[in-house]
Structure formats: structure tokens, C-alpha cells
Image (tube, rainbow, N blue to C red):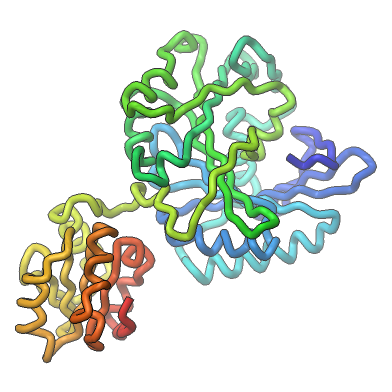
Length: 378
């Protein structure tokens, strides 16, 4: 991973929001890590990818706990020979992210250390022994032994909607598995954003002879979702640093939907989505009336229509009745159906209307409905 530097696993320095490693060989090189937690992955990923493309970040990793936890962990990684430059890049990213979402909290000091090292051990000390046995690594500390198994994840299946990340997490939970799914995300010299994904399965002495999870998962989905990998002792730093374990990278396109299924909204069920939208409006203290299960009258000026498929008859009926009086927002949850909407010449020519898809909605600031229109048509 960092080929020109050698580092000791527990030789680090923590200063507020950053953990620093300095190489112990003649190649003076610093690697630094910062961690924050977030609920909405879709909103932050485009911003992090911009930092990759401008070389402010070396890579970042998304850590998802199994069983699933609502908040996701983001590990930011910096590298360079100049520590003040790393500090400068981090401070810029820290400021931009806080401006983008004030609810994001960066971990610091002991909280940062605990979260960083927890993937290997719950205690931060030098008394960890790592052994290689068969197809697993054993982490020994005090009287406990933890067995780590590694599986590469086929991201192409998620990008093609054959297997959703939500369903994979649900299946791992149903099989009573514990561990972490890691997405290591980098930029290549060509300007492409790529991801390397894997599942670290954690077992203990009492359950180390449990089911062959890759066989169960692959059989369940009828695809080769997981591929068991043999990890060696010299990969301990890679585990701790949430780095890539192989060169099997998958392209991440701007419209990549890998993380879409982890949204707090159920975009696959219109009735459930409408209930969640109602709740969101209330939490944000937006004034509204629900005229129909999928039609909301907001702040006495906006009609918000939610559809799961393109229905020109219903749209025409709504527009005929309300278009002359109110601004209209039409949200279509299915992307293919949304494309049918924007291809409609009748809709495109109307100025007082906004059309959005589910991805647009995820990045939509609900509070803006209280103060201003977003009048540009999608």
C-alpha cells in the first residue's frame, strides 16, 4: 500500500483529529488518518471523490458494521513527506465537510484511537499477537482469541442492481455473522474513481467452526458475491488502515448506486416512502397538508407529487388543476421511469415545474422548501 515506507503497528502519534504514522526507514514518510461518522453516505461521497481527484486525499474507506449500524464510519487517509502539508489538507477538508453537513462529528483523541484500532482489538496496546493458521488470522490478546476471515466482494453485482448492499447486509445478519464491510476508494492517474471492497468476518473460539458464509451467501443470491481470500500476517497494517488487499478494483461512476439501498428512505415502496416523507417534513417543521397519499401541499406554495412510475394521466390531471396557482415538484422513484418523464416534451417546456429522481431527492435540502423555490427543471 505505502510501498516506500515501513511502519510499526503501534508506533503512532495522536493529535486531536489525526493519527500519524512516521516511517521507520530512511524514506521519511507520514501517513495520517482521520475518522468521522455519518448517516447519509450518498450526500458525502461526491465531495470526498472531489478531494481524491484534487489529491488532497490519498484514499478514503467506508466501514459498515455487521450487524448493520445506522451510522457509517468514514476513514480519511493522507500521505506525504511534509507533515504541515498534511495538516493543511486535513484542515481544508475538515472545514468543507463541516460546512456541507454540520451534523458530522469528527472523532478525536481517545475516541479516535478506539475507533481506529477496534477493527483489530478493543484495547490499544502492544500485547497483541497475530498468528496465521489455515485460511484465517488469529488475533490474541490477554485471554481472548479472535479469528479473522476475509472475503472479496463483487461490486459489479451491486452496480448492476443484481445484489443490493442492503440485502447483503441483511443476509449476513440473518446468518448471525459479525464483522465489517470495507469499501476502499481511490482515484487513478486517469481520473477514474475505483473501489476495492471486502468483508472481514470475525469469529471467536466458540463459533470458529461456523457455516461457510461465502457458500451460503453465493447460494442465496445465485451469484458469486463473496470470494474467500487468504490474508497473510504482513497485511495487518492493511487491515488497520482499511486499505485494499488486492488489485481487483471496480469503477465507481457518478451515478453509481452501490450505496443507494442504504438510504433512510424506502424508494422501492411508494406507500412507505410517503410515510417517511411525511415524517421528514414534520421533523424539519415544514408546514404541509397531505392531499393524497402521494401528493403534498407544502408551505402554501408548492405541490409535491411522488410517483413510482411515469403516469402521464395523473400528472396531467394535477397540472391542469394546480399548475396556474402553484409551483410543482414531481419526484419519480424509479430511474427508468424518471427518464420517461424528462423525455416528455410537454413537461420539459413548462417553466414552473421541477422534476427530480430519487438520487436528486437524497441530496435535496428539505428546509429549502420553507424559504425558497428551487425552480430549475432537472
